[in-house]
Length: 291
Image (cartoon, rainbow, N blue to C red; front, side, top):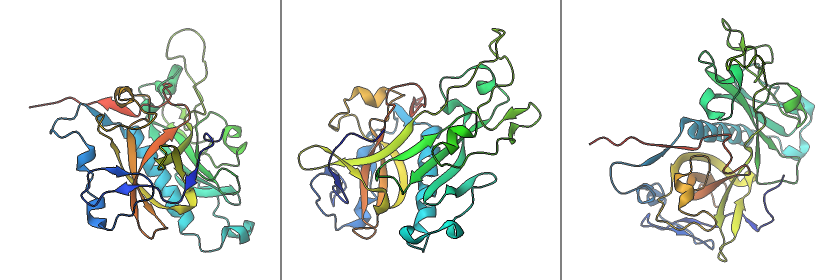
C-alpha cells in the first residue's frame, strides 16, 4: 500500500542555523555544522523518560546500509541487466533477486516482533531476520518495504531476498532464521505460527509550507543516520504528544538524512510506518532515570 497521496519534494526542511527549530517550505540551511546539533530536539534534562529501542536503531541502520549499497552502483539503473546484479546474500548483506529490486537482509532482536507464539520468543532464540526492500522499478518512490516471514515465498512474492531458509538462529535448539516455530513454548499443545510481514512500509517525511506531509524521495537520500525522539513539546502535525509515549508508534521518531540534492544537505525527517500503533514492533521504551 502506497503512502497517502501528498506532495513530494526533494528538499523541504532543515534545521535553522542556530539548531533550534524545524523549518518548512524549503528554507536552506547554510550552517552545516549547526545542522548536526540535535540536542534541542531532546528533552533538556539529563534524564530522558523515553528512549528508542535497539529494534529502532537497528532497523534504521539496515535501511541506511541498503541506501548506501544502491548509491554505490555506478551503472545507471535504467541500463542495468541481470549481469550487473549483486546476488542475494548467503547470510547478512545486500543483493537482488530481480534487477533493481534491492534487498538488505539482516537480524533484529527477537523482542522486536512483539506478537509472538511458541518458540518465536523462546529463550534460546536470539534474533529473527528481516528484509528491507527498495523496489526502484516501482512507482512508489518514497517507501521501503520491511518483510519478515516463515517461508521463502513471503519474500520472493515481492522480488526480495531472504535469510537462508535452512539456516538456524540457534543450531543446537533447531530454531530457524525464518519465523518457523518448531516447539510448543506456550504449552497449549499446538505449534502455532509466528506473526509475519509487519511494519511493511517505512517512509521519511517533512512538512511543506501548508503543513502537509512531504515524503522524501528515496533516490535523493545519500545517508540515513542518528535516529532520535523529538521533544513532545514540539508540535508535529498529525502526531499528538501522546504518540511520544506510545511505544508502538513511530510518531516523534526522527532521523537525520543527508541528501544528494542539495549536495550533502542534512535535514531532519520524521519516520512513518503504515502499521502505526499496532504492536508488531516496539519503537520506544521507558528509560529508567538514575540520580
